[in-house]
Length: 299
Image (tube, rainbow, N blue to C red):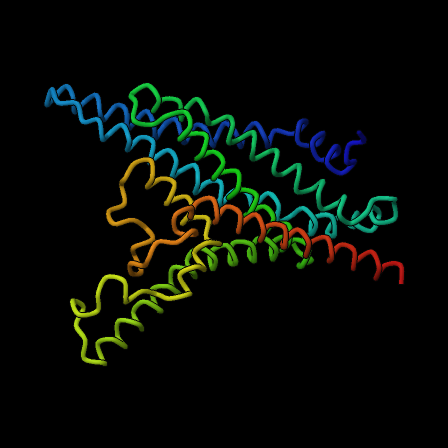
């Protein structure tokens, strides 16, 4: 099978540079420091109180997973936001379009190389996650499911980054736009639900009802609630909640209780599917913009 030449070139350049080793080293160093500090605090507590708090070992899993998720969401757009726009700035995109390469090959090669880079980073963090398996409470299946969440979030952020890279001529603008859209996706969906929930409560209050008269299944954020499906942070928190039980009441109860349904019962899987669908849309936009550039050049 013929390898994508853009992907092959990007991987060759990446393997010869110091960027990938530095990213992996810095990424895992931060995770290791957090994990070791947490373990050290547990040891000190046992020495002082002779009481083993097994819940603190779950904190290790929670802290490491949270930091890794945040770093993935920050690093992936930075890697992909300069892929297409960087070729424009170096005036090499026109040269690529004069070859037999199709626009989808260019986008797939760029995104594939960035995704493999982050996949290596995620896989390299397995030893740190394996520390929690020593104490129990977290199984290998839990860790594997969390890794799937990381991969899906990285693909979502990377697709968004390459989409912005195809829309903007400058890498700085593409990077800024990627972070802005990502922040809007994460914070905006929370804000929209908070607003809808507060407006619904206000409407009931003006009608003369008290919170006790409303009933548990009455006041919620309505259909706006399902915008959280596209939010990678909610998916991560739901998976984390299911494994550690650290979020009292649950993320999905923050904006009012509601009747059980297929989506709520399988929220993590459905949300990952929705995010992959949006990722495909972002990639499609990037392919269309690169193709448009090629048509404009030939016109």
